[in-house]
Image (tube, rainbow, N blue to C red; front, side, top):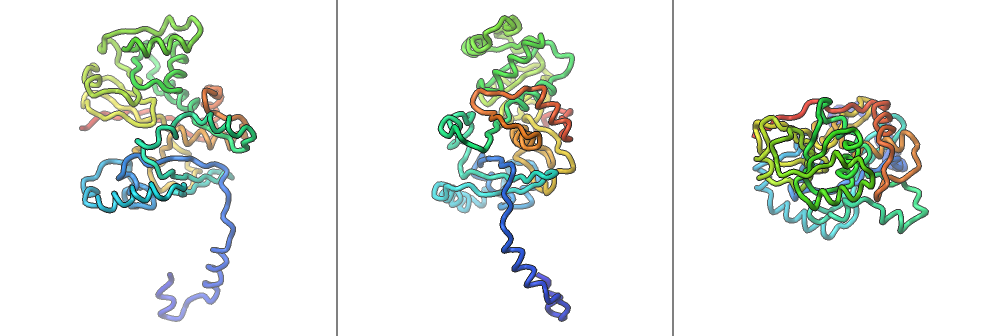
Length: 326
């Protein structure tokens, strides 16, 4: 509000008319919508509609938010009552309009939301909206996050679509993939159907490998068994707890965004500013490239094609892993 213009009589007479016309403007429809959901009860404060100061920094637990527990509890009640999505961010990239919509659910409530979306395609076969889960780009980023000289990796965590795909790709490249549990080995071995599984081995040793691909089920005890200097690379959407000061922790699959991406004034979860998760980038690539196929269920796009398109549009890989300071 131009309060001093009103006080001194210098206000533009067209200001009110201009404002009224602007609010009547029809809202633009987005080309790409990224669906996300809350992670913890306190995560609502890290959205732009919460505290802008917290939203501008990577997500972390802040002690003084415990003082707001009555408000936090009330917000949890509201998420149960208010079941509609709401817009938390609007961006523009070239001619593409982007929006991020939050689903009023938490991580513990939304397991079915993180499945691969195939049910919606089967239920609505004429669906014009393309569903993109970003798995192929996640695999591409993981493959390019592993040091070039690596000859073997250890895989540990809940087996997901990304875990199956990256294991297969590594075996095809001649890199040995070590698993620690027999049931995980059997699931992976059964899914391949070819003889590149010679590079898939089961072992009880934690000390033979210094590159770990880790998912949500990684335990603290398993982390402590890793050798000094181990690089932990998450293949899931949630990072492991950083327990080891003598080890390195890569971010969850993500890339640096090009400067042409506008209105980036908040951080995506625990990622730094202007770093975006591959699951979000994948939808943007689909729109930029005009791809017409879904990427959901157990369908994957061509990994090399997705990676090349990503680099072509200015997204850059993150090269430096983070050493734990805890």
